[in-house]
Image 1: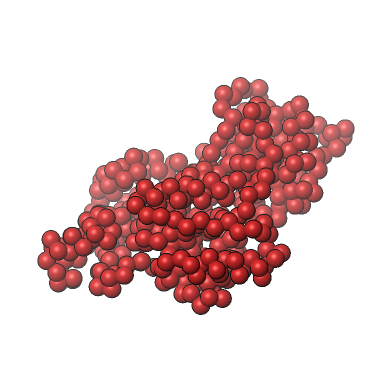
Image 2: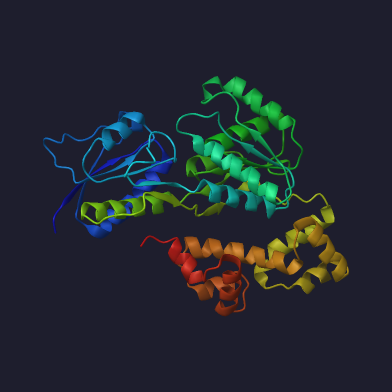
Length: 389
């Protein structure tokens, strides 16, 4: 088997790029004939190998740096790019490019807050730069999705692109948060921005998540666990991105033609931690009843069990569920069960029979029926869509 010399250019200081390379590594282990050149530096300090001494068959590169982008695009060999979706990638070029699906990230974030009963929403983004258009895109989509649910969303971008002017930035975020109604469901552009919001909440003595629930993006484990309280975050499909990008590069090196040049990778899901562990229901009696549903949904409870615990007539309780959550008692039970089933199917190797039992379904058939209704896929199809092929 002929060895293929591959150059990887990525930002070794970014956890998100590191996860992309994990996906590339998974592909490398499968094919077994890649010899890989890497430099473990920040993106702006990356260099191509000496082409006089080492023949390069293909390049996989992060295009979020102008010099990297320019150097790589001048190479007359197969190239696959990835990045934040903006920056120095020319969308009219014939170089395939992979990036995160920002609309699905925002949809997932909006659903996370809507499921918890929030009615006040905010998005904390960044001032625009050449490469962070994803911040605006996520904010605009989040505002759209909560708007479709009948709510408004306050938007913040500030004036400082980095935290060097931390005191001024903190004051600005504090002033913005003070002006917003509570309880508040707040999506941040990424985990770094989310931690800044948490620091502002601490300064203002706002309770998280009771008054302000905060959700980041990237699921940077170190940042999320260092935050107080631990930060909930949207987990991106970075590993899947790396695997698919490597696979495509291999096909290009083999001389196979491609007809698609832009690839968006969906997020894997919300990793819920303490910063969003709350139900934003002002009616305390209903909050306790909904909490009971969330605590016992996996025990196989039915709507009548909830009615019996509540001590309220079923028509009255159903009416209150509809008014507060927008759906029936039965639907809330199913939503909790299906959410947990999605998490287990996606992140574990447990048999579907075990998952159906853990999540409170009578059988695999019941799980499959409701899962297909909710997602359009069977549990097995859903699992395959999140696994590296």
